[in-house]
Image (cartoon, rainbow, N blue to C red; front, side, top):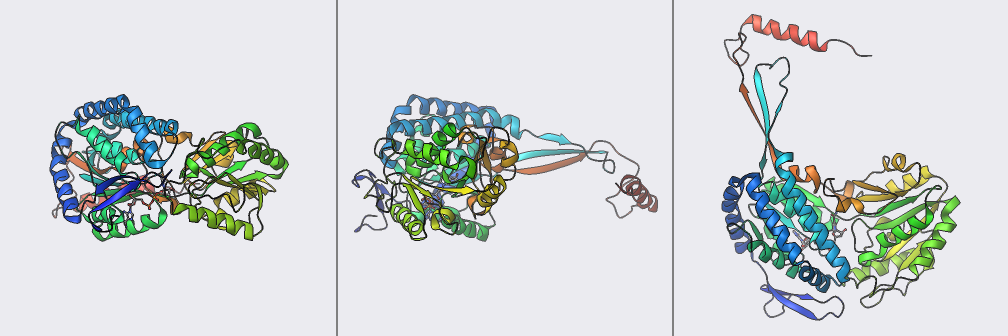
Length: 491
Ligand code: NAD
């Protein structure tokens, strides 16, 4: 935040050097409210375009994003500090989601007729999905295009206009998205961006938006949910995780080690669905630890991953490592001096007491805990013994599905990691402190609509129920029918 102009501007910084990249104007409350009013007016015309019209606009946006993939990749890399290759992959996956939402909204959200039941057999029952109106999207910094696009694309395709508040650590990515949309927008105010710190996010949740889709920390999510509750507006909360990995006796140890390491350490460990805790059964624990440690020794901060994007996270990572060490954890790689001024060396901790911060709280750094378990049942129980429930990974040749179905979380990868995020047709979201609601897939489209039931008589019947002149015959008819339909005891 700029000291003299304290409420007007803030700066983005290069996480590799700390240098100021650019100053941004903070959108104040009056402007946030005005932008939401404009978005509401635009929402009527956007809805009127219909699924086909919106599909054309959104696919044109896909084309602009794709043509400028290098530019957006390098902008993401600059603001977050991640390698350009990772940043470009992130943008590519976001484009995939946008295309899927654009192409599938009409099919998923089309009105349909439902059976009316014997009692109401003369009625036609239809359910249509209505857009909410204006959706406010609040984004984090770790995947500044992929994560918010999971809401933006699906909300737009469903017929809403969107006001997006990017993270103050990745504001230029937000502006770039808005400018690129403007080049293909049929009219203004379909997709707008507001800038600022937490206050601006709060202005958005307090404005007259019809729904908020928030991605960020659990702590902020609870504040956002409380503000939304005051206005009784629905909210999607995509929060942090403490994702477990289960390695069974029949796992492919080499593949497990290679993939789990990438899941834990890529993007400097700043991945909500990245591996943080491993539970490996005793029989294969030594082999797994030996393999993953050998691979981790080849990883270099500054080459394979960048610095911590948000400098204050370094203190959290340090405190988790210190706490684990103090409680008796062993270190297969790294130690309490692995956290540098900007970069963190890979850290692998073993036999970490379950009450340690490194097990209970989201670390969000290139660190991993590995604990041995006597059985798969114990591994499942420890994996679930957390307040989080975002994603998990299971390594087993024969029992993957059986284990996956017992995990309390929104997404599980068997013999793989994270891939569900790249599959646009499946829902994404968590349980417990990882949040609620879903983005991606048909569920993600439905999330930004509400169902409207419409019924109408198909033909007239001699018995009328909804009238004060209902006859005794009608009452008896209902009783007889209900007894016929539902009095039978089953089993
Ligand atoms: P954060 O909670 O600090 O901030 C997220 C956003 O909320 C920012 O844009 C911020 O300005 C805004 N904000 C802050 N206070 C607010 C308030 N009172 N009202 C409204 N908005 C407010 O989170 P972060 O540090 O930017 O992101 C990292 C977190 O996000 C991690 O916990 C990570 O696990 C999580 N995350 C989750 C997912 C997911 O899909 N589940 C994806 C990416 C990141």
